[in-house]
Image (cartoon, rainbow, N blue to C red; front, side, top):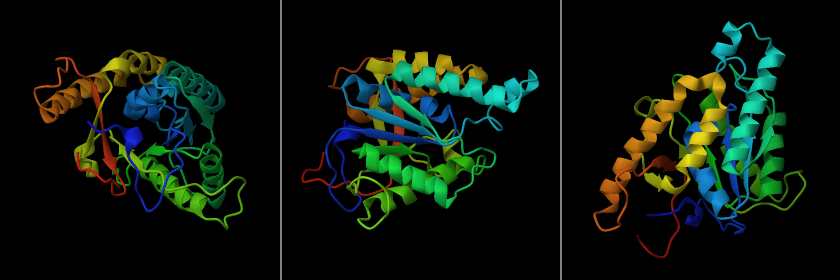
Length: 256
């Protein structure tokens, strides 16, 4: 099985510090979709930075609105939930408070992401795919993540730090993958750290209805992983996995 951390590609070399950058539209997206990858990287001692473009305060906090919470109360609640989830996974987290429903691209917001790229100098980037007919915030985040990556590589871009290499980018799985053109090209075994992902999901009380959905998805992707890995790896029956798509070609000297 190919680890996310070992892949390179996209037009250049990557300074290999093992750092992972996760760009999430809302405060919970990184938990459902990439919590296992984050926890795996952290368990290897690799630094992980999560950037939440918004708190998901308007579109993904329905239970809080129904309970009569104010906008600022909901932001505070979502910030606390996401901070707890990041701690459970072993990641650092940053909130840009760019607003959601809609999340709009601006030059300022892309520039802030460029500065994060320069600071983190990631070896791998995880973010949203560019198609989601149910939630325009997700492709907006993915597009900004790609745009900022290109600008962060440019020697002449006016941001602090050195230009980055070309870290590979992986799209994590959308909530309704079939409608988003998502294919599970990479299956990541998260069995050893699924307890950490489960603990992170439990932090997201505003979306309690998704806890079991994403636990079940991990089981189904785990079944697919076992089928594609072959019979001789000794994988447990209850293998848990996450699915990803590559954005850029894999660069390698060995097919495996």
